[in-house]
Amino acid sequence: MMESLRSAADFLRELGQPEVAVVLGSGLGDVLPLEDERVVRFTDVPGFPRPTAPGHKGEIAVGRIDGREVLVQRGRLHYYEGYSPEEIVFPVRAYALLGVKALVLTNASGGIAEGLAPGDLVLIRDHINMLGFNPLRGPNPEELGPRFPDMTEAYDPELREVAWEVARELGISLREGVYLATMGPSYETPSEIKAFRALGADLVGMSTVPEVIAARHAGVRVLAISCVTNLAAGIAKHPLSHEEVLGIGRKKAAELGELIRHLIPRLPV
Image (tube, rainbow, N blue to C red; front, side):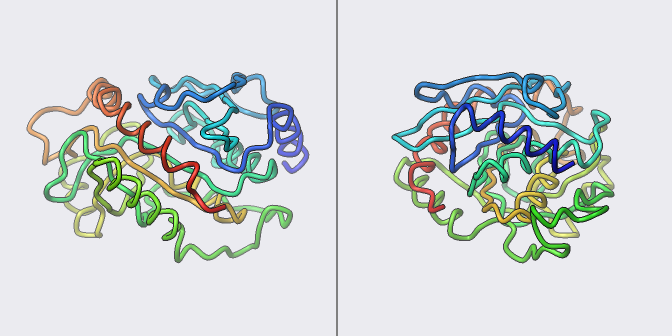
């Protein structure tokens, strides 16, 4: 595994030496154009799988935002696509070897907490892993991180504070909450949503958590922003659909892009 990761990192190093990486989720692939960007497909990078989910472009761009070099991953991999946990976190681990110090994750989610509405942007402060797996299972690559990494502050408090400051300056409304990850691809039942709410979840989705675990294992700081694209089952008054997810994502793309574009130069790494 480490040989494949080093090959991927060496390939990406030819594009630049970014300190910050951004992963753009469902319907959000176009929110962050870069200055002087160099673009490759996932399939061009050694070891990278190809995303199959609708709304995920499957490309990597390296360029600049206000002088800071940034890597942007447009699209991501999910367990429901049939990929292994190791394949899902392969890109994040390659970025860690590349020298990335901070990872900004975005996703689309279903709103569980009272008061959330489609279009809300929510800073993730913690997560609940209901995927049924941990991407660190198996032999531990000591080159990446320790056998038992701490997850007390998986979502970096200092980076979250920067996001709050930037949002206030831009007049962008933010919420904060706990994200619960499920395996998918089916949406949750109303009874499952009731159980998740009782567990303390504010949001539900099918991604992000494996990437966070792998990033923290490798010492990469994490900031995650979720776009509520629908109310969860039993809360929404209509059947759930992926078309709704993509549609709301596209409507909020400009605002989310503006937030990320302004916070990246200010992230301490």
